Amino acid sequence: MDRQHALAPALTEFHAVMRTGSFAGAATELRLTPTTVSRSIHRLEHRLRLRLFVPQGRGVAPTAAATELARYAERALDELAVGLQRADLEASPAPLIRLGFIRTLGASFVPRIVAAYRRPHPDVRFVFEQGVTDDLLDAVSGRRIDAALVSPPPARDGLTVTALFDQPLVVVPPPDSPFAGRGEIALAELADEGFILAQAGLGTRAATDALFLGAGFEPRIVLETEDMAMARAMAQEGLGLALVPGPAPGDPPFPQEHVRLTDAAAVRSVVVVTASDAAESSPAVAFARFLAPAAAPRG
Image: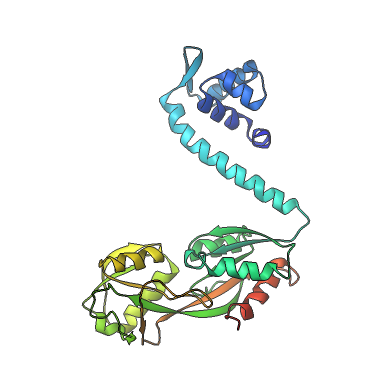
């Protein structure tokens, strides 16, 4: 709290008054005097040309303007707290890797591969960021993160792309579907079915859209979600056929039965991306080199 107050005193004091309902309560929390907080809030009101608080009993009540502003103030302070944590990590002499990844790799692959890397490199610390491929690539380009696990492979300048593995796209049918129990199937055989797909804008959706284009039909989409585990669960409830990435190398099998697609394009390629001008000795580049052979399951 002290460091947030040092960076954004007016915002911190405003939020404290909103939370405690009085200048005295905010002052106690921030280790200031009530007079200091009161004067600070009055200066803030003057500068913003907004009335933020009105007297109420022994405390104050927020105006409608203050209530609306507080929603965004809280978000800003949360971001500031994250920024301070990141600054602490950057200031530490220990190596740091800020790693981004798409959601479908977060449940099993990322924890496993990070644990494998830290066994020979116990001093390396990680900060994680989950997102969609385009946002993660922007973050690598903007140096907000050091490396990203994404799909499909990007065609952007300024990035180094290291191939990791091809992940099959599979169909999870409802238990009573005539396709349940099939070992494999061509996507064209499913042209009349309803599909549960990844949301538009996700890398997985780009891969499935290309797959449907190659199969020569436009799918009837019944549901879209960013959570592939949810897509599989929806298929189990009979809501449609889920078209999802299969388990990554080394991941446990799905609890749901799934059917392989015979289409040659029924894969998505997963890569690790770093900035092209990153030093060869940097922790992120070393991690990317480690990942290429480590992505395959080990016997």
